[in-house]
Length: 162
Length: 170
Image (cartoon, rainbow over all chains, first blue to last red; front, side):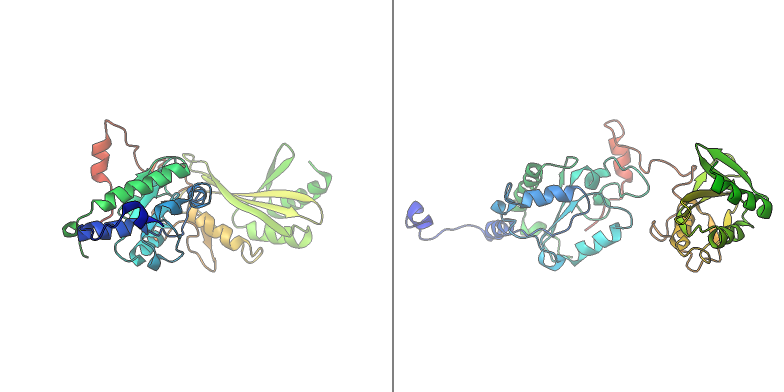
């Protein structure tokens, strides 16, 4: 039963190490359990049974930055929160990725004022921006899948070891 | 004006030479900064205003004298009364004596005044900013504080603003 029956006796599969590593990274990418504002509600919905983000390997939300690969910045980041966010990012092990979820995290959104960081890319390097106020769970999942496409294209020689 | 409030306002007038205004049944008593602590103590001890329910300020910039009104909103649960005290302050180095000795709740309220308006509470036990991070310049709720933080990016000025954006490195 299962994959053997469908594919027959495949014997040996040849591929590149890059492909295998990137495939494994995209199929078990654990986001950090971390929400800042109303976008976090949509993030929870994306994780819950109706949308079920674990179909894409986002099986668990890890409450610790040490165990997570992906930071979803869900909501507006205040200037007082910015150093905390950076610290969480620094605590995550390499390789790590960041999704700026929603307009506030991407560019400040409607909060063009003294209290809010005008785009979280001032604090951490962002890989994917998801538009919407807040984005629907489908939009977040689309952002995640877009990130997977990006990760699948990564080359070892481009990775900067810091 | 409420009959019960009238005697209290009169007592304030006799003791501290205050003036008062009434607007839709709400009484505002203007007190000078030197007298505010005595006035609060009198109201708390003699007239049962046991609660400082709000403490805030308004900025009448560009008017300089008085530029700020510090507002003490007092409630008496025993007598079912509310009374507003206002302290007018000038624009240059505004300061008030701390009310923490009379109402403990004034501690954080005065830190907020310091943070948002730059009104110094003199003799405050812990005069730090309360809302904004350390090292913030200016006082956000002042009228002359700039409104927008960053100019919005449109198609015609996108690149110009993008060059000045402080993007994070790895």
